[in-house]
Every structure is written in C-alpha cells, then in structure tokens.
Image (cartoon, rainbow, N blue to C red):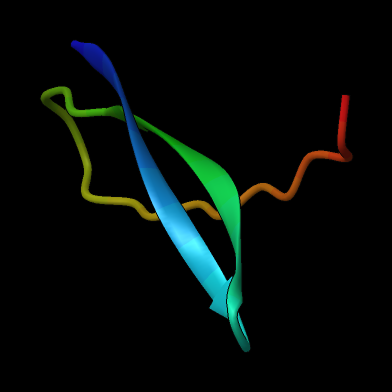
Length: 39
C-alpha cells in the first residue's frame, strides 16, 4: 500500500519540504533509498 507524507529538512533558519513515499507490502524484507532531482 503506497503512502506519501511530508516532512521538513532544516538548514539553519530555513526549511525545505521533503516528500517521503513508502510502499509497505508482503515479501522479502528490503530497504531502498532513491534520491530524485528537484522538479
């Protein structure tokens, strides 16, 4: 089941919005981090 949440990354007094997408499903355990460029 895919889900999307929003978080923030702080840099000094500035904050950047970070989108976090997660897909939790049955099967072998795995963990992947994918960095996508800005839109």
